Image 1 (cartoon, rainbow, N blue to C red):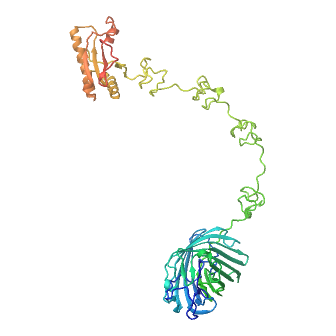
Image 2 (tube, rainbow, N blue to C red; image 1 turned 180 degrees about the horizontal axis):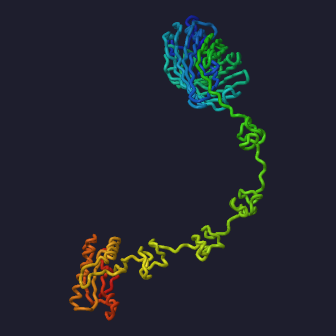
Length: 591
C-alpha cells in the first residue's frame, strides 16, 4: 500500500514516546530516507494555468520560457497515532523556484524542461521512538523533469484539444532535503483543454510511476494516480484569466490499500490569475489551501510566475469563395455559381455559355464539323475537310491509298510519276549510291561503270578462291615495269588485304600469251608478278602474306588465235592460298 506523510498530515507516527504508546517499530530511532515531497508540478510553459496544461501546441520552432516561485507553509507535519493532533512541524516553510522552458519542434509536437531549485527550507529535527527526521536546509536542486507532448485533436482556441504526454524525472536532487526520490520516475498522461467563448479549461490525468517504492514512517511511498482540473474566465479584453485549479494524487501501490485514503490522497485548491502585461509577457499569481493533510500537501501554498510566451503566428484565412471555383468572391461576378477565369472582368468567375454539341467528340463542334459523326482533325484552311478523318493510308506513309502505287509498302511521294508515287526507293545495300537493282556487286561498295557487269563493283573484290580485279594491271611493253595506270587497281588490292586479315597468304601469279619463246614469256611473267609483290609491300602489306609465280602462256583463259584472246591471257591473278594460316579449301586441286 502506498502511504505518505506530507504537508499538514503526511506523517503518521505509529507510536510516540510523548504519549507512551506501544510501537511496532524498533526501539532505537532510525533515520528516514527522504523523497520528492513537493506536490506542485508546474505545467509546461506558455499556458494560462499553474498546474493545468492549456495545450497550446501549435506553430513551428516556437519557444517559451518562465519562472514559477512556489511557497509552501507547514509542508511536513508529524501527527499522533490517530492522525489529528500535531506533534511537530518538521518542515515549516519551503520555497522552490521552477525554471522551465518548452519548444514546439514541429506543429503538434512539444518538448519541455523543468528545473526545480529548493532555495529555502525551514526544518526541525524530529526524534521519536523509532523515528528520526532531520531534513536538510541547504540550497538544493530538485529532480529535473523532461517532457514531451503530442497534440492529437483540435486547434488553438477551439473548444476541445487532446494530447498525450510523457514526463521523465531524473534523480538529480538532494534526498536529505526531501527534494528527490533518488531514482527515476515516469509520468504518462492524457490531457484535454479548450476555449468556450470567454471560458477556458484544462484537465489531465495519468500516473506517477516510481521505479523504487519505499516506506516512510508508517506510510508507503510508491506509484500514484493524479488528476488536475483547471477553469477560468477571460476578462479585460482576454488579457486576464481568473479561475480555480484543483490537483489530486492518490496512492495505487502497496496493494492499493492507500487508494483514496485521506492521508495518502493529497488534494490542493489554488485560486489563480494570469495577466498579459505586455506582448508575449505574462504574470501569474495564486494561492490556496491543502484539503486533506496528505503527504506533501502544505497548509497553504502561494504561487507567482513570470512567462515569456510568444503566441503562434495566426493562420491566414483563405479568401471567401462561396462557389468553390477557385476565384475569390471579391473578384467573382457570379459568386454563387462555379465558373472560370475570364479576361472580361464583367464575366470573370461566371460559367461559360453552353457549347454546341460535338457528336464525334473530336473537339470540333458539330456546327463547324464537316463530318460531325466521324472524328477527325481540325483543318482551318479547308472548311470542307474540317473535322473529317483523313483518307485511308494502309502503309502509313502519308500518301492516301487512292494515290499510292504501293499502298501496302511505305514509300516516298513522287507526284510527277504516278507509277512510283508512294513506292519505296530501291535498296542500296552497300551504300555506294548505286541501287541494288543496278549494282553488279550489291554487297561491296564500288564505282559506277558503263559495263553493267562492273557497275557498282570495287576494282578489287574478295571471292572465295581469289581477289578478283575488274581492271587490268598494265606494264610497259615486254617489260616488268608497272605503268601509273595500274596504281588504282593495286590500291584496291591493298585495301582488300587490309580489310581481310584472315587472308594470310596470296599467290601473285603472272600470265602471258603464246607469242615469243616460251622461256622468255615465263621469265617475264615471273618478273611482273614479283614487281606487283614489291609494289604491295611498299604500300604496307606484310611480305610474308605474299608470294609470286610466273606461268608464261601455260594457263590461258582464251585461245591465242585472236588479239582479244591474247590480251585476256596477258594478266596478273591473286590466288588466296591460305586463310588464317591454313590451306584455302576453295582452291581447285591440281591448279
